[in-house]
Structure formats: structure tokens, C-alpha cells
Image 1 (cartoon, rainbow, N blue to C red):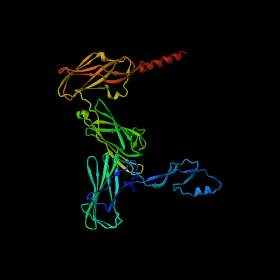
Image 2: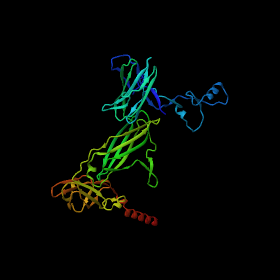
Image 3: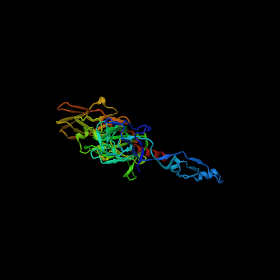
Image 4: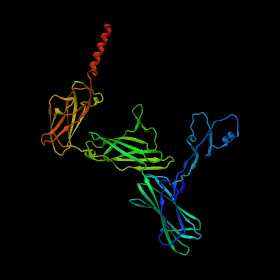
Length: 468
């Protein structure tokens, strides 16, 4: 349902209203026979009121009968206090009557501005060949919304009006100017024209912030923070991420059922309403479309967000962010990644105190030339996890764009979360060296957590019980 609000040129408009300039008679003659009035088309709001509650009585009194006779659709309706769980719309101070907005209101980026331009003949004369031109000017461009000045055909009798409705999707922030021009022919054949300017401000309804976590294997965790900075609540109809050409993505904001399957169209947030100043955080996992793609690992463009929402009364808005970027990570000539010897055992791998464990190293050559690699230990940089066995190992030749794997044995000295570090990879041909200051973290279990220790403790306890 679309209705008319107050005129844009109303002097009583509140914050956010536009400021019209005086009419500009380009032909130097005054006064004009025609006047321009611009109104914004918007949806009505639910009228608010303060209901009067009273206690129901078994004895009829004139006051009680008067209150009971009021219609619940009346703005001044009063309601008895009844002990019931059902909450109705009137309990929130809202009535069933719609009310037209009294001010111009706020205009936000992504919304559609609908206006009605009314040209009124306030004279006692008949005006011929009335043409109307409506333009919208921003800081960077100018749009023609409607133009009938080239083929004017409207004749206005005294005290009659002609209306033109235009709509435009707002795609820029900042000051906008609505330019309304009219041209007409007077009864004596003279042609006249005039213009009016209406200025209004476009604000941003949403604030978007990002947080990036680049992983060693080229995948990226993208966290987007969405805040409603508008004056009213929103209902998000669509929150979609569109990755750049180098990435595929997984939406991590869906809810899973008991079988581990994603429930379609069900968000972890429950509902799609965002109240003013509320913040939501969305998480996406970006994966390179091609394995070992150098462009995917070094590009700063990640993708865009496509957001569609509705206001409290159903007005739709659409906003697409600019390209979400990151600080492009530096891709070194050598890439070192850890892995467990058996990938099937990765989830159940355990590291015990003072017990050697093996960790795999995958080394990839990102340079444009062949390398002859050696892996060695830097004992001064090692912490509580030492290298077990030889302190250096030859890996042989490695061609550009290729990778090689090896197994290295470590010995943990301290329980708890420990960092594996203190390795160095060196190219014997060029002398290039890469120090691995942080290979991975392992959680070292104490000796009491080992399976055979638990079995021995249980056996020892059983023997003590038998002796007793």
C-alpha cells in the first residue's frame, strides 16, 4: 500500500528532510502561473497510542459501560486487565489504524526513492503545452527521471493539477539534489519556464567490517561484521557472499541437524531480524579453485556481499558492497607445511611426554628455478620439543612448482601446549635460507594419560582390592 506523505518542501519537515530553494524564473518575469510541489511516496506506519487499562467489575457503572462500548480499533480504546497469556498488538501501544508519516524521513543507500511531482495552476487562466523535466543530481552524475518538455501536450485549466510519479534506486551516498523544471505557454503565446531544487542526504543503512585469517595451505577464513546503523529494524531476506574468480567458499553460518547435515535456509542466528545498532558476524571459508594457485594465494580481492532487506513495513532495499580486500600475503620461494604421517590418524593422533613422535614436512618450491634442499635443526631456537636423530637431512633436487615430503622425529620434554620450531631449510645452489619459526602446535599429554599406564594403574588397583 503506497500513500502520500507530507510535501518535501514543507517548512516543518524534521531531520533528514530536503531543503528546497526558491523558484528560479529564467525568463526574468514574475510571478509564475504554475507552482511545483514535491511529495515523497512511502508506506504508512502503525499508529501508536497509550491504552488505558482498567479492572473489570461485576457491577455495571456508567464509566464501565462507556469503556466497554469503545471499539478496539479506536485510538483511545481502553482494555480491561484480563489474566491471560495471549499478547496482542495493542499491548505494545500499537493500534490497528495506519498513520501517514508526517516528515520526509530518512533515505538510505540501496532503497528506492519514489516521489510525486505535482504542478498546480494557481491562476485564473488556461495554461498550454505544459512540460515537466525531473532530474536527480549526485556528486558524480546526473539522471533524467522524466522529461516531457520536448513533447508538451498538457493543458491546465485554472486551479487544476498534473502529477508525475518517478522512482529511482539510490546507489550513492552523500548529498542528492532533485531538480524539477517546468515549461509552459501563457494565453498570450509567451513561453516561460522555471526550476526548483530539492536537496536531501543519503545515509548508509549498514556498516560492514571484515577480519581476515590467511592459512598456510592457501585457504582463507573471512569474518564479516554487519551492523544496522539505520533508525529502524530490518528483516534480512538475503545475505549472500559472492567470491572472486580464484576462490570457492563454504558458508559456515548454517545450522546442522543431529545427523551432521546442513538444514537448508536455517541460520545459526535463528531469525532474520536486526534491530538498530545490532551486530551480526558471518564466517566464510574460502578455498582456492585450483590447487597451488599462485594468484589465489597472492590476490587481495576476496569477493562481495549481496544484501537484501525489508523495513518494518515491507519497503525493500538492496546493497552490494565493494570488493572485500585483504593485505596480500607475501608468497616466499619456499613453503613448509606440516602433516601427520597418516592423515586418517590426524584426528586421533596423540603426543605423549618423553615419547618420540613423527611429523611430516611438505616443502614446495614457488621460485622459478630448481633447488637443492637441506633441512637442519637450529637448536638455539628450539623450545620444549627437540629434534630426535640426525640434525640435518638432504632432500635432493626440487624443480620449480614441485613439492617434496619427508618425515622428522621429535621428542617432547614438557607437557601441555607446545610449539614446534627451530627448523631451517636451505638451498645449496643459491644459499637461500628459510627459518621455520612456527611449524605447528602440539598438545603433549603426561605419562599418566598413556594407554599402557592406565592399564597398569587399573591392574595395580585390582590387585590391591584382592589383597584387602
